[in-house]
Image (cartoon, rainbow, N blue to C red; front, side, top):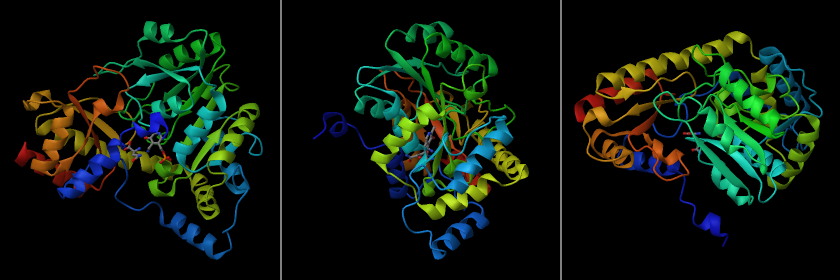
Length: 381
Ligand code: PMP
Ligand code: GLN
């Protein structure tokens, strides 16, 4: 057996979802919406199946979707993208990340990552024989430690992996922070893999792709997910925007990993990306109302709630509740006694001595579910 994989624990999302099911708890752990995505997209996906979209589509994605990704880059970020050579459709952002890392890293290469981080990053980097160089953002403000970031770059650095809006922190990187990252990327002549799956889920702060900064266009791989932009997380349709020279190599990785992504879903997602700007504004404003509802509720029952400018997630400090134990024990106890589940933030660290007083709540749920969760916490904490 592969030594890295055989030692890898089951993902925290699966572990906590199973625990939630066992205790009939409200699952504010794993981040998935509890309402269906747009009915017209679901209908388009079903119609495409009946319409004969059932065989292997082109390797880099169906033309309709690649063109829609290019149009979306132009509409939201003023990026001019060639759909034929600069877009690749993948089976979710997860595969997009794996393909991008495979394409950019050789064994022994270093890649800078920012902690806390999404749980697939570090094992995937290690599986490729590459070396993660974590830089920690410190709660509660999660600001970028400039000197430490600078020190993480060296002669073996090949890339940085940046997630903004960020899971689990809800942080949206500021233009100043992005400028610091861009300067280091250019100075060290490296790549940036930008996980932007929550690009349309920001609450006031503006999402700026690193790719739009000066000199960044040839170095950046930008990753989006239909799961997040259309509340269809089970569809697993991702899309990569990258300069042709990099995209060609990512396509080779994609060819090895999945080769293609279901054509009916691609066709429906193309329709989604062409939705009017009001759709995307409403997606964000609805989610913002959910963030406010849950954040206020959590504050009301005794948590300190950290700021959140984007994503599906808000982080809460458990210390004011007086709980005697760490975040892992807290999440277990809260599931058992309050029947509400969250994710311990220590699970998002790859290094020792992670903060153990923070938990992540997903607020991408119906209002009545969030309200019920808060009332269970009020009764049970
Ligand atoms: N990156 C981040 C930051 C995520 O939170 C997720 C999970 N939602 C993914 C990537 C994976 O996205 P997908 O479901 O499209 O594979
Ligand atoms: N991205 C989702 C989260 O952070 C879960 C994805 C998964 O279950 N792997 O909750």
